[in-house]
Length: 475
Image (cartoon, rainbow, N blue to C red; front, side, top):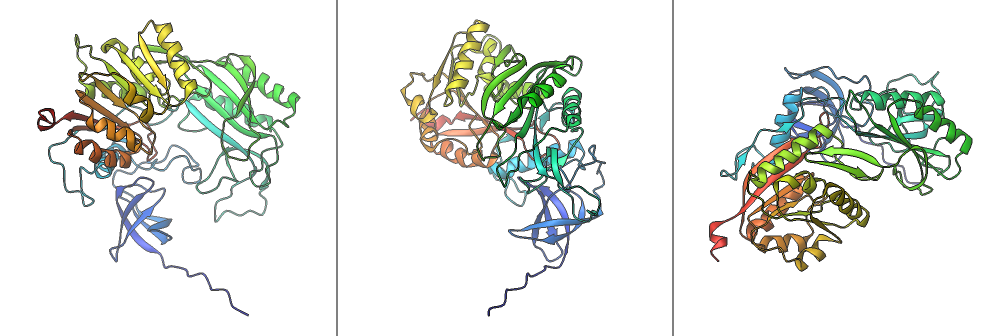
């Protein structure tokens, strides 16, 4: 009878963290190997246990970075939402700028400059690093997450729990009473719903239960919050329990709408079919730049309202929009048209393309309500764009998903003789790949901005300005 191979336990290593990565911070061990470690900050010296693919699991922080700060959330390191709360905000933004430069290909992996003629601007962002999110999604689960080293003897680990998933677990949650990234108003809703002890929770392994997700959106201000509450359940939910929960949160003075969405699928997603508006309205009211929008309850919008304003102004700078110059603007992957409509007072003809038809309907309705002459087309960018008569003196904004431009769209844009192309990237690595395609067609990257929309996390936005090379224009 064959014996099972014993699991090899790798000895711990001491790692000095020296840079931010896409999902971790990383640094070198004594033997020269680079490891990625979660939940630490650049400058920390840590002991960690090596895992797979160059990762290591934190055991102990031996020496914190000189500018290390105390995390705001007592669940930091247990909840899976934040990774950088021990890093000062200015340090986070410096490291994010360095990460973007490496991923786009401006800096080499060792930090040396490769593209010396690109202007890299300091990271921009809203002043607050906490309480900035206008949307949070919490999950119900039948399983409570208990960290390693905690005595489980008197801990009830099964039942109905509302919170956030810990790193690496979709079947368990960390119960929370408040989130340091959410507004006070949204946290008040979390406390009210948690007090109701709603059950049965969704079991993501057995695919049973009723209560799945709590989605909160706050489109107001700290002084005047406006919150929409969505209960995502299966169709088996007890209607009396649902109405009781809806009445409880509707009693809060800042709640504008309470919605019921049904998801009977097995995927762990906080969306589904809107079954009922239990209180108020389902339409969100948001403002960005020059435009006030009415959006469906599940429409995409940047989760950092102040940060979105910074992003729009950065895009305006990259486009070179000045008073009196109202050239056409083409907004690709435009979603609900937020960028184009927010800049509508500074551009001429506005054209948008978006694959999701519902988002295009919202864009058209908002343009009409704002009195803005705009045309929005529904369909894949790579199919719609070649059929439009855009003209040469055009400014382009592309804001693709994390995977970047479709190869056919990238090839078309590489040959298009527009004046300026601004690439907005939530996936800087994809921007680096698409940069090479654009440059092969005669574009030149001149400026790069990093915009920090997601403090305390690794996520970021990059804004890149491309112009036509003189040699390309003469051909």
